[in-house]
Length: 176
Image: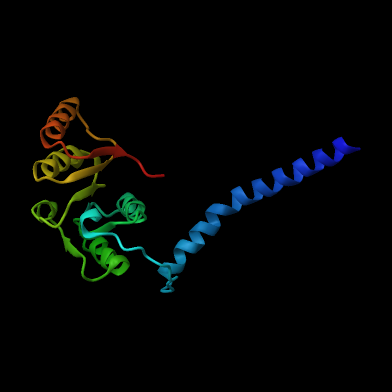
């Protein structure tokens, strides 16, 4: 009889865990959409000293660009200062989500020239990744580059050289 009870308990726990695992994405998505509906949830923000803050800019503000930006801004001490995209609608959306004081431009090189920017998130179409990453490192910016890093092998060698020369953080990855 004791074995039956432990099996039943196990199955109940397994069912509860499965239900939670299935429901969690919906719950998280709903919580995230609360902000989109104009409702703000107040939470205490700890003060991050100025020397520990990282000012970032996002280059490319499509679906992945906004996803990568959201992930970066979830870290304490990371602050968005500007964004670049060739579509005005994306730039307007950036200001709607993160404030009207965010600098926006259609020219990513303006971001690279801005001394207030410490690092960039590159989420542009694939054929731009190498050019923008190399330019960013040459301007002293740390880089998060969406995959794929390059379209041609030669571009990979150029990025590696730029990274070695700059000694800056460079990461290739994919959120989600």
